[in-house]
Amino acid sequence: MKGKLGFKKFIFETLVIVIGISVSFWLNNMQENSNTAKKEVETLKAIKLNIIEIESYISNRRITLDDENDFMNYLSVHWGSLNLDSIVDVLQKGRHIKSFHNLFLDYREFHPPISEISSIINDGSIALISNNQIKIELISFMDNNYDYVNQNVKSEIELQQSFREELLKSKSHEIAKILETTSLELKERFQGKIDYKKKILNELKAIVKLNSAKNYLNLKIRQRYWVMTFMNGFSRKLKKIKELVDAELLILN
Image (tube, rainbow, N blue to C red; front, top):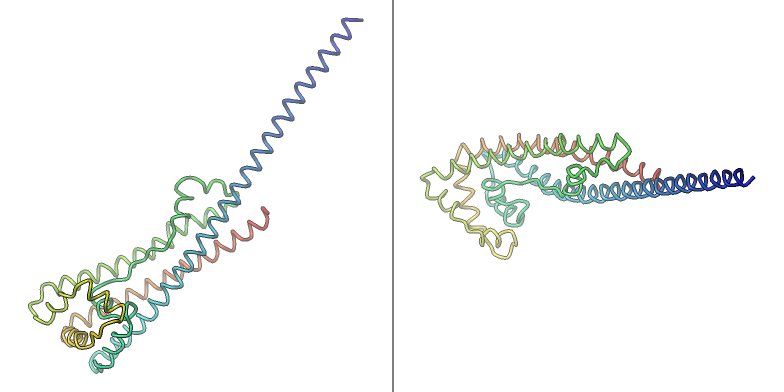
């Protein structure tokens, strides 16, 4: 009798231990799943916030580029009959958006704040996202859409640098005066605090004499078209990813 009771006690204690281990394992698994789900939500929220930042950057960038594009098109179409005094007024008031130096000597770069999305992909945090479509779209966004814009911006920069090198080789005194412009003067022009109309007029007169300047402007307009085209695709991809992320957050929450 004692043997049977001892055996039953052994079985009972064994079951208690097994059940205890199973429950503990289940609770740990539940906790891990909960932590993973929280990390996924945090990752998706971080992506959404980053997208909002990028969209703000793109919106501001597009305003500047659209304004500059319209001005470049006007100059190209009316190159042979430009009213230089009127153009000077535009350039004097245009500050950094419409300026002689931004048109002919400098370039527009493209640096959207993509660090968060880039980090999530590069450090492996993207694996926390259970929705495969979001992961595919994020990688495509970085490898394709972002890269396409950058490649075309780079081509525009190379075009500008080529034109600037040609100006450096010029023996024209007027061109030399343009190249002597200091960073302090540029800052004052952009701020619009000092009247530089006379100097801008002389710069324009020197530039319109150059056939290469009109050719450069036309090539820049052509290249800018592709920059804007791929930037629009960049924006559409952002919108699509944000919609997918919003939908996934609704499910997870």
